[in-house]
Image 1 (tube, rainbow, N blue to C red):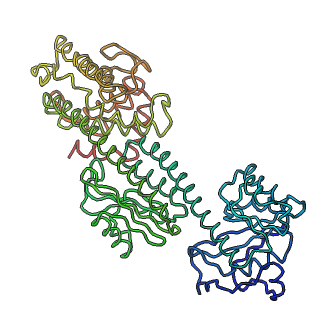
Image 2 (cartoon, rainbow, N blue to C red; image 1 turned 120 degrees about the vertical axis):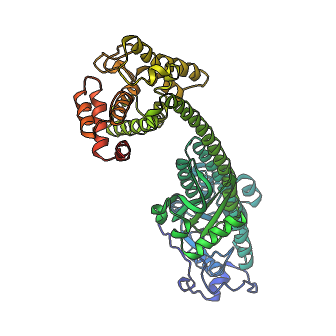
Length: 547
């Protein structure tokens, strides 16, 4: 098999004029001079299929200097239909085929056309049929029966006619390829929109946008997405900050654009933000998303090939979809923030009744989250703990003592030990909290902070050995959330002053937790808690207790 690619004038074979006369009629040379320098665009790949070597040579002479749409022509050679099949199977980028009819058999070229169109299913490549024996393949019959794009008898094929036919074929291929690229691009956009819209956090969404855009713009070396204004649930900035990145910008996430980009690119990004428009250069694109919730977002993509009009249109369609996604994320964040604000309000109401505990619920939230993340990291309770559980338990823990709203102040703030009757009233806060939260959770479909909070309110005073209240549950019969919050609640209570006790030291508190492993507390939860302490993840909570 011969698959020589001809792309440079120095590589062209030399033929005398008598050889040219064998295949082409005399005609004045009117072919434009080729540009003096090469472009960055890849050449058109044209396959010559003919059993006569002179046809290959002369075709290269005639078309060797042709430039169409700033792209030269690279030639591949096959000297039989069988050889052509191998080349076509290995090369999906062939734009046009100059095909002889009679080669190893009288209809080898026609059989090759059927193989290309029907067996391979390649309907994009343009086929120009050339024959020295028109009687073997009558033009009318061939044009009707075979999917070809032009039919030429070699005896009438001048250099100009070959040039015209080839340019027409390449232009047709360009249009078909653009349509096909657009179809595939739209399919990618639909698929990416589906996956992106499943994301519920801004961080995962922004990284997903980078991944999908790089898939849409083939060949990109690096990309970053930056935002200005409201760019996160708790973050607002008046200077653009990098939120997601790939390639050489991967280590710049969280940094201001002006610290991460060289001056030309920095100025380009700021200009796009200021003018709210897209900028396309030869290998760099800066794309602006519509303003969402008081924020703007821009993507910078580097190192890609020059983008066609179709590519740019697809990118802008993608941007429209992403803007909708940003709006959805913003609305979702607002909804979550409203839920969190409600939960904090409920938790603070309980604290107001028991004001000496200060920010107890906030500290329990932080410690519960640290413990469950450590359990998740270690692979404990895989049937219960997942990412959603890790996200919810901290907020739900804030509600563990919400039932104290129903406890009289005389009992709640009594400086001494409670008598038996008072203890019964005090312990009823678990049932009060669970009932209120369970009823509220019934208004929300699926899992929610309220539902998990109801579970915690009911069970955080149960003990692992079964001696707790209100139900005397033991071991794994106690909800895991209750077991986690029980430890966090006791740890914080011991470290801080209460009306009925002084604050304990850290060493005394840790010794108590260790002693109660298997008694008050689940040993697996104790182990995770101690790991959190050893890693120094709770230092701020401990410092606040004795600050």
